[in-house]
Image (tube, rainbow, N blue to C red; front, top):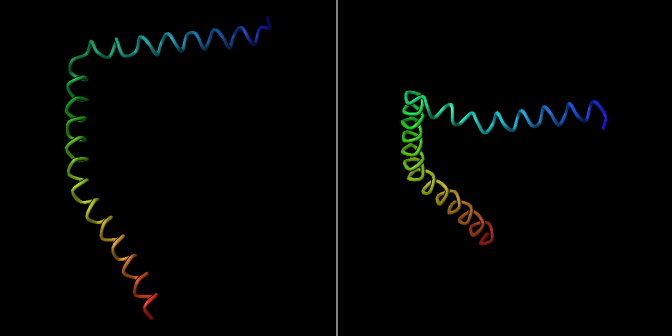
Length: 75
């Protein structure tokens, strides 16, 4: 095995182990977990409110495009 290949595998193994232990270390801190939970709740609320605006706007644009197509064919 080449030295560079061994180094790449070692770095990959360390990165994988670190990615598994990071959430465990983060879960122990309840303050940060609570903050992220509140941000997630706010983001979910904003997305729910956004759908109330996005759907009518999209339907309006589609309606204008269809009206333009029909009016151009009529002339």
